[in-house]
Image (spheres, chains in turn blue, orange):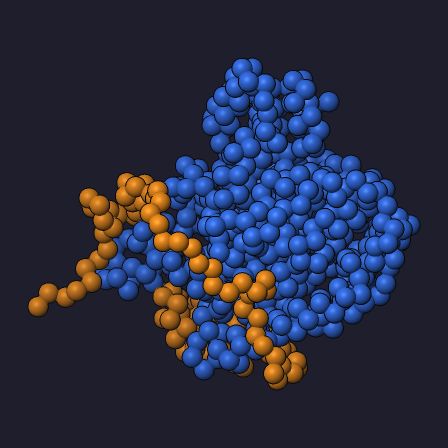
Length: 488
Length: 97
């Protein structure tokens, strides 16, 4: 079997058994990349040379020491808003086109300590702002299941790379659904951890109270394994939580769901939900019931407010975070400006794309004198109500199950002219970020046109284990995750 | 609320973002549309509700102030759009008298 077809855990097993070398793994993956990347366009940067060098070092070391670490020789792709020392980190923006970070993000330092191999950096909507990768300054990525469709976003490059078997697994970041929505669109598994579970140090900040880094993988076991590799407290991120990391792989051992109460929020099954998605998700809920879960209808009455709350809070935080891009210390600088003010204004005009500008404008507006209370203050108060809805629900149930997205992947260009419609495509994922909860998207079916459909499971804060256990039991009783795209 | 092109101009100035006349027109239209959607937050009664700024309840996180390794000035300056010796170059800020 070709190496690129194996899951992370399968590949690791073969590697540990000495059946393959790291160099063979890297060779297999760059061969695969050379075949499908011209169509999928998942990467912004590939680091072939350093990957072969790292593989060679690992192979030599292994011959001498015969000792491996959890990720030794495992070829990963990393979303291009996560800083990698010495490797370009562009955020798919003209602003950072030539930026080479002088340090590693904490998640990268952790992966490196476990001897992973970086294959490249993946495409995203500029500064992670978008739901399709169409906002990338370097052009959109494509959905491996249908090249005319978007892979979702903003971690669309990572999801497409995993689906197209261009890496064994990837990291993405999720501010309003940016891991889960592309995972659902591409038929792979995407996990957003509890806010504070994974360090954000070295993740280029979009909305600091919402951002989390998480794994995008081929199945649930791989997601648990990769989460284990990156989770934990970090003194360099004051919002990361000092709390021990459980053994996520152990959580997968229970194969039935007896005693587990799972809630189905009625507000997620209303108009706007594609009938094929509804059908697939209802069937998945039936399967969870067959596995022993106690299914219960619940209410999250403020779901309707989530998109509005999000686009006030996320843009407000973004307008502040992106103030650092001023053309002085790093990044793009506009030419021939007469004074400092003009340097700032022109640098930002020429360096940012339309969606980023739109969000900076919106965020600046809602924070400006006279509107702060009416918009930002109001949104923060309604955010409390959204959190209260989840608190009430989780006093009755252990998990919540919903569709990951209202529709399967849409066509390129279909929503790019209408920002509000694009924003509304994140309606099922956004409230999770507002409440800081963990959630996972996994495949639960296909549309008639052959596009993947995603299921979302939402857990209590820091209860990734329960979520992984249910996701794994469902996955193992179905075949969806084994279906692979024909890329043409 | 209707966002006018004058509003856009003012906000763009606050955001240190130069905008073209075409952008002014587009942003005025789009921001009006988005804020109309945001206005539905007014349906929710938030009297006496505490605002949420961060979800996990962290307050201030302190640490000892000690010296630890940091970037060399060479590494810190490596991404500078324009540099001179150990500094970043910017257009002149102070006027000569």
